[in-house]
Image (spheres, rainbow, N blue to C red):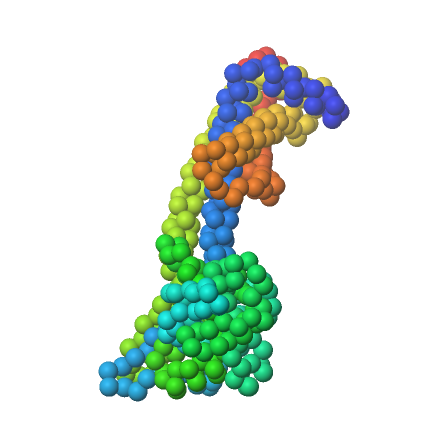
Length: 396
């Protein structure tokens, strides 16, 4: 005789609450496995957010090649050479020309800034670095073609010189040369152990005039699409430059080597944590399987009676699987809630971390709970199909 969904639910609830020790041990196994998986997912989410925040504080991941040779002429990156690099190497977003300027001080009226990072840059430098403009604009083509004495400064330098006033349209002096501020860019860092001291940029064409045509300090900055491509692009770029400039030594300097290494270490640690979580789930599954076998043996007479009055094997199996699903639900929900609360407390009172509850991670953890719970009870439940009804009624 088939049970209605309501009767099946009531029977399942009765059987689960009828043996608190067995149900509690089963739920505990699921709880531990799901807690381990959910905690790992939370750690992964927090680590990714921390890494993303650290990346956002810097320019887009980039590499700067240094190509030099003894008794060799300095390398001049022609437009053709830059185009060849951009088209032949996947993972490159943009390539900009960059020249380092030697400026002793920057002055606006009575305010003076020393130790300023000054560069001459090409038109696509903003795309290469990913810096946002906060006021005014970045350079436009006419600034380069007309050799305009214009400058873009960052937030730190703007505060040092203008103390909160609007810098756009004002004139500042780079040593003895006057430049007009056309924009203010957000401040970023290339090293977390160094406080920003202020940065400014001028058009590359005007920078060449200031440098008197000198090639010293003129390089290219190669932006990479993502941190994951960092090592791949670095290796390919070095090989490509060695082919393009035989006899030269090629060195590469980047702005995110430390973050790339941290990301690789994070991935290795997370793989280990995921393995521990899966092991905990497997142990919980083994416990469910053993308890399901014990439950079937204890209720052999009940199984025989139900089958004798018309219940199919599938209907009887469904009752045991429903019990495992219910315990998986209780254990999984308890684990997800507990891990969420503990993580919230830890990231607000013990250490600061950008944690947010992720519904997707909770769904994955609950899915794992059901997969292990139902899957582990399925094989033992198949024993029902091999139970002889007559022997079962005798309690054998």
